[in-house]
Structures are given as C-alpha cells and as structure tokens.
Length: 89
Image (cartoon, rainbow, N blue to C red; front, side, top):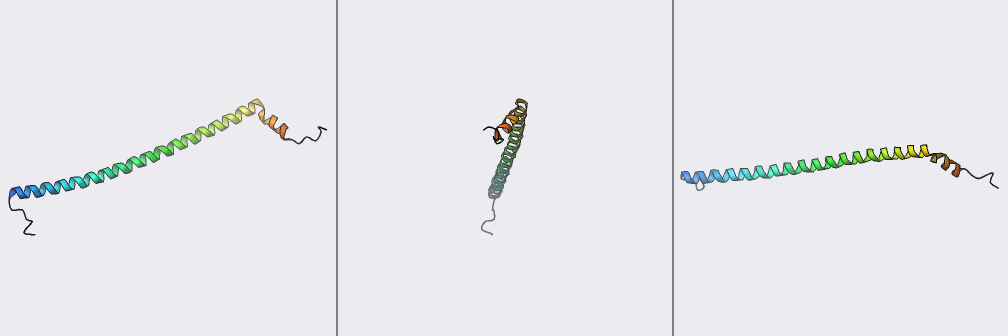
C-alpha cells in the first residue's frame, strides 16, 4: 500500500478527484436505471388505463346498440324470424 500512497498534495488531489469521478459515474448509472424503471412503470400504467378506458367505451357502445335495437323493435323481428314455421304450409 506504501507504493500507492500519495506523496504530494497534487497526488492526493488526483486520487480524491478520481474517487469522486468514480462515485459520480456510479451515481449516474444508478439514477439512469431508476429513471428507466420509472418510465417503464409509467408506460405500463398508462397502457393499463387506456385499456380500461377502451373497455368502458366498448361496454357503453354495446349498451347503446342494444338500446337502439330495442327502440327499433329489432329484437321482436329477430324473435319472429327464429320461431319455427309450423303454420306456413
């Protein structure tokens, strides 16, 4: 260890600067990883919300179509067309 001990103030300064730079690099790497994970989590959350919203819209659309069919009497017409023709001879 005696060979790597700084002998002058300039050597000590260089060692400290190197250590600080290494710490900064590690901190930056960790920060980038955390930010990347947060972005991924946010993207997945947004997709889930969009799917929920789309599902609600589809449900509303199906209900509106069913209501319109009821108002138009389509259900009655379908029921009449599906009954077997027993008296049509």
